[in-house]
Image (tube, rainbow, N blue to C red; front, side):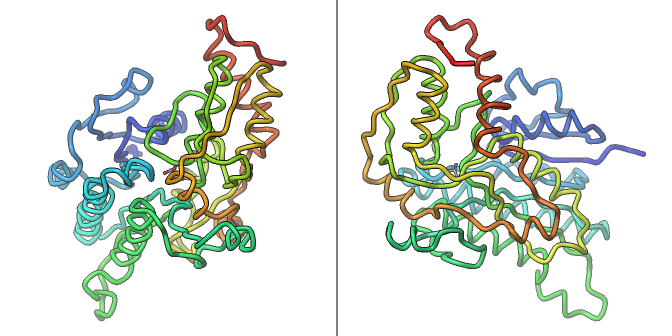
Length: 345
Ligand code: AKB
């Protein structure tokens, strides 16, 4: 049997690199990657082909391919998108739209649905204030869909575009013999933390930044308040979720969009874990009004019961396992040669 043909956009990003490694480990895929940047050494040998350049202008080139699955990861994240809003819209919406059109055309042409896997975000939610956020607790997919950020608005709209191209494109579903439409599946990710890469441009970045700084013995000034709380997840769980939803039988899926959850922490609890793990770590809190406002608009926690019921989602890492079985062992290896690192076994 020939390999599944897969496109990964934004392959040089944090999720991109981890996903390419995950796909290669699983096997059975011919991986084509695309990004503005050349592939980093860590994944260079794993891609059959890399197309470098701006996705919006590159998509026409992909009409010549026959992808079974598209993982569309390229995005401008929430903090960066607030300082370059039009550019963010171009990347996040126009890039997605171009790719959806291509996948819709290909699905119809070959009579077989292209799977379009889309990482959405907790940024798709928007709470008016901290009091509402605390009261809301764990939110469901259909609640509080009033994002305060360009990135969140882009994600929410692209979820809707995906649903449109997957179900109603040109109202073809009303034809007597409707054509095959693309198969759109989105996951709303919480803040992600990798032991191998650092995020940039996001607002949940304070979690991973604090931990990587502490591991290197560098002081860290956290840009949100101690009581700021959102959900986080270990990168291996994010990759597990992407691979699991891709393989899930379509008949079992009752939605195009799913929350997934692992653990929720305040920035102060992050600091406590950092101090326990790396005695001598120096973490201060110097909230930035704009980035704090973004985090205040995101839910404390999400309800992922739909993903658990429909495609068997379950994280491998709760907060303790995240630190003890994943982050600390890996980070110790990563910074092993740095003399400033003092960690507690
Ligand atoms: C960001 O902070 O923008 C992202 C996200 C939560 O989607 N990490």
